[in-house]
Image (tube, rainbow, N blue to C red; front, side, top):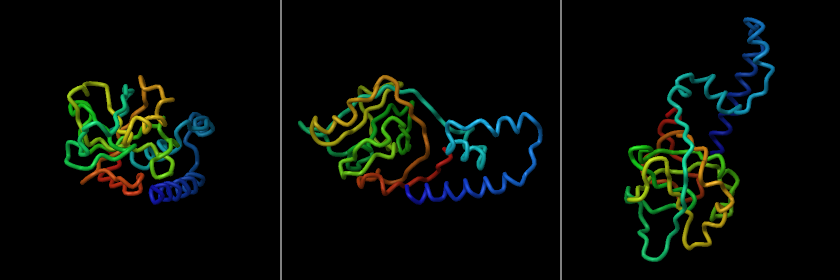
Length: 184
């Protein structure tokens, strides 16, 4: 994640330097450049790769929580170990497995390893009751693991598909992100 942020910062600097020397095409362009963006990273990605915004997928999804214990399988539908605060179960017709999603409401929440959540979750599980516009977030072992997410409005989370992963989701608090295609 640190490498991705460093690349985005470098790209932002390069874009601002190259954009500063280019003359504005018209008054409307100048006016739009003066309005601060609500999503500078998203704007940066869209400006550098226009196809990224065309293929971006955003949803408002309802979420439920699940935790380990009482006979729950310790593996997801891919055969991987479930990863606390990373594993997501979804309806395959809505969100395919191997998808990396970003849930902005979870940024900054505490991770089991003591770090802060970066908002990235990994769709690697399915469930019989997970249908349509609903996801199920794995929080860890025991009901107490759900506590960090209890303050969120679980009826409408802002969810974006940001890429795909190979293999299994990271269990290391997110340091092992394996993005195959960040434009998806």
